[in-house]
Image (spheres, rainbow, N blue to C red):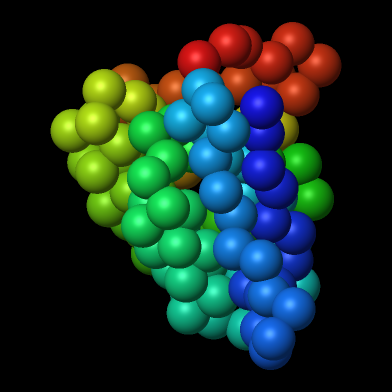
Amino acid sequence: MTATAVHRPPTGADAEPARPGRDGQVVLRLSDDLLADGLADLRWLLHDALLSGARRLVVDLTDVRQLSSTAVASFLWAHRTCRARGGAVVLRGVNRRTEDLLHRTGLWRVMQLEDPAHPTEG
């Protein structure tokens, strides 16, 4: 089962944070709009997912054209927590520019990359 957080962190009385499914997985779908406002929203989404007990975070980057190195650092922070729980951070739908960034930093060895057309199981 997969819970999805889209675009902005939920706010207000009707807010329902992303919760992991039985498989411990949470899917976070990011967009350029979310990342354009800075990293606070991204960090909030990651933090909320980890606090809810997620072991595996699937970060869907299909709608992201450019990813900053500080955003990647946030994924690495989340990866450490997931790894300690026996899980991982998976980057789905990575474009060529982001893949090049991951190769330059050596993080392609740490982060799992997933093709959205062929998702992997936890």
